[in-house]
Length: 271
Image (cartoon, rainbow, N blue to C red; front, top):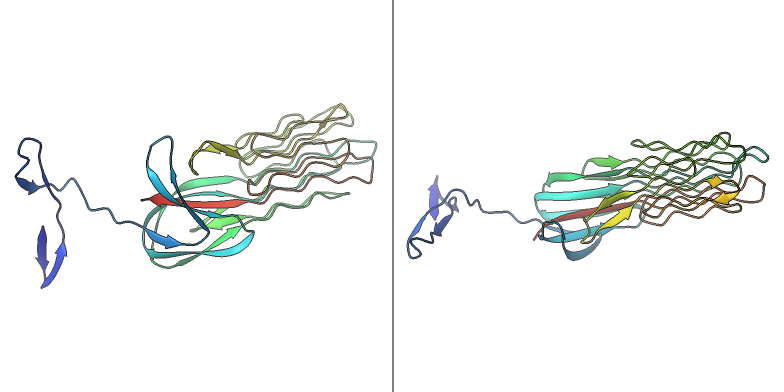
């Protein structure tokens, strides 16, 4: 199992015994040596994916702003990145209640990393204003991949905020409002869209629900995955580190829309 190349010794083949000949070791080139990733940064835990049964090292980045993922030995890693949610608004008095804010988008996949330091950015959720439109949630990024935040919600119509993947819902009735887009589905006429479901962190979790609007003077639910509910009053905030949208609030004045939830970045690799 030791080969020679220009005078340097290196392992370049894998050998294994067969069931038929347990005492005989033969060349088996179908079993390549796996290179394990070694890295630090964020909160590090060990998890087992309930779908594939594999054991992973998981790095969780939850603080907004920039931090570092430091790779000492490179290899293939998987990522789940969610942008920050946008806040709901309070609509226009005597015209409509506030619309729900949108969740940030979710991006997942895998990439090969080298031995170097990578900047990780977790996007903030935008505030739910007392008047006017809400602004977009902040983008989250890692390993060359960006998940944009939910777009701001308008206070002059009855359509919830959208994101890059899904649309907000429209409620045509007077004084009502639309639900914001989720990370996994469109918003409805009042309820926020559902979030993105995955087993990335070791159990089935939904993140990135859209903010709810108001339907017939009653606050509608936020989307599954942390979306803030709408209210005939102050809208409810989206849940932190889910990238969820904030709920819409009353347009009667003196109230605010709910704030969008901050985003999150997860990186994992096989142990």
